[in-house]
Image 1 (cartoon, helix red, strand yellow):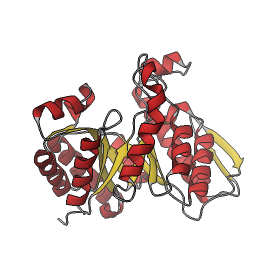
Image 2 (image 1 turned 45 degrees about the horizontal axis):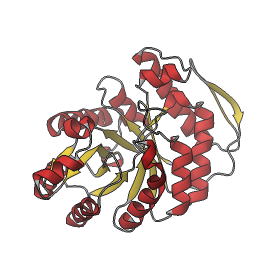
Image 3 (image 1 turned 90 degrees about the vertical axis):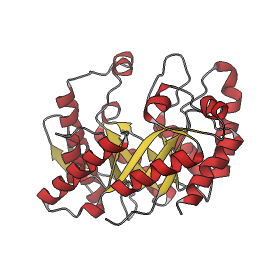
Image 4 (image 1 turned 30 degrees about the horizontal axis):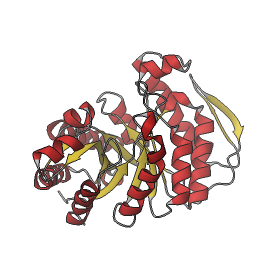
Length: 304
């Protein structure tokens, strides 16, 4: 198996973790993006409305704001929740960002899972099978509107559009990423529709899912090499145990991240790459320290 070229993106925090830190949030994001510019390939925003009492900025407006300031990057959602925006409206949002950035959007989309914010914001929270059915119709509408911008129609169980005009449009539609590891429905959906697939999973689990994706692509007659496999998770990297502990900022990073020294994390990335992972979206779970930035840049340089 040919090892793919490895690329990296930074997932930036959705907001300050304390009200006293708000004044430093935007300067910290800008400093970090400036440090990564030209050396990391992309920047990514998660899509949530609330994390307890922490600040949480809206995904699409935040992404558009920073994309205008830093045109060096590709920009992506990791991942947008299909329930939170009407599918045709989301297709239009994505097309607008794609047009204004000159084709630099990767639209990640998933079925949605965070029940507390569904309830808080007044969205229905149907069963997983219903949300997955909605996701399938959502990406179908995306493709329809991106390929037929002069007027697209679709009638489904959950959503419909009628002669939806989507102009202006970029010559290349946004790249579509489907996130999730469900082996019965999500992986086949990614094989059918996605340009990218993303999941947070340890190496053994990731390898099994890649194998299932390959088999599904073979079953439907798709060239598996046209589907870019990626990984999203926290990173806690340092030269000493104290640095690693300080930079492993929460349980998501601790339990589902790349945590350790440079050499340890580089070895894990090599294992993922050997499985077929071509892209790593690294979430520092906050504004990274200067030494942290330097080590992440060393990772990017190591895998050029």
